[in-house]
Amino acid sequence: MCISIMATVSLTASAAIAAGAADVVPFRTGDVFGKVSLLEGSAGKSGRCLWIEADRLYVAGRETLGVYDITASPSKPKLLGTLDGIANIRQVVVQDGIAYMTARANGLWIADCRNPEKPKLLGHYPSTANCTGVEIAGNICIIGGSKSGLEFVDVSDPRRPQFIRREFLEPVESQSVAYRDGLLFSGEWRGRCVSVWDVRDMKSPKRLSLAGLSSNGDGVWVDGKWLYASTGFSRQDKNPGAKPHPAARCQTGAGGLCRTAAA
Image 1 (cartoon, helix red, strand yellow):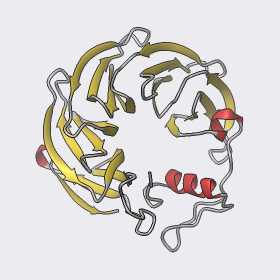
Image 2 (cartoon, helix red, strand yellow; image 1 turned 180 degrees about the vertical axis):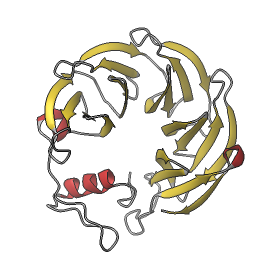
Image 3 (cartoon, rainbow, N blue to C red; image 1 turned 60 degrees about the horizontal axis):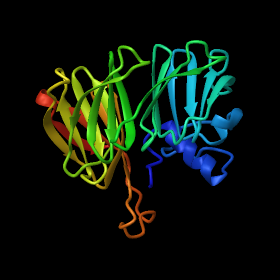
Image 4 (tube, rainbow, N blue to C red; image 1 turned 90 degrees about the vertical axis):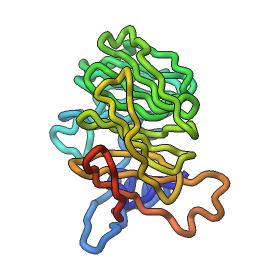
């Protein structure tokens, strides 16, 4: 998979770390991102995904969730605590100190991080969706999966998550999901698009539109009126590194329709 380095600062930093670089090379003249520093702890060494809530940074590695304090210096996060033994974490989202982590065939893990020095496993949801994407909308956890599309789970009691509904996609494979104001955006790998859904009634979601991408749909994020969508490459793509695709951003309009523009 190839992720555009111009999507966000964190993606640029990840690419530089992977390459062993000492500095992040800015994409645009005049941009300054500073030095790359590795986080302490096992989560920092194997980090796959991250989330920031208030003054806490959450970093999930292959089998570890690390909680960091970024109050004093965001550029030098301080490790507060770790939770080990969570298999195959792919993405993490945190709400009110509760972390929700997708883990492909291992389903959804839920951890209580309200005491950051001693995070503990709170619940588990054994989905068959091959869970990758994850988002929280109130008491509903939305999972994007490569086998069963979108899955809606009631987490009002995070110790006992309950199935609500599954929405199959064609072709099936949701890599990431983002929710804002009754709309759900799903980055779809094989579909090479972002699908937009009306989920004000999560028991009866309705697809509104599709925004085509130049390659396989991957990560999605919403900031104000802009939707940012990163793309990846399948093994069938020829020489994907020769012409890396930039992240796309889509402006949402009436009825959830999108128009794409260069990032």
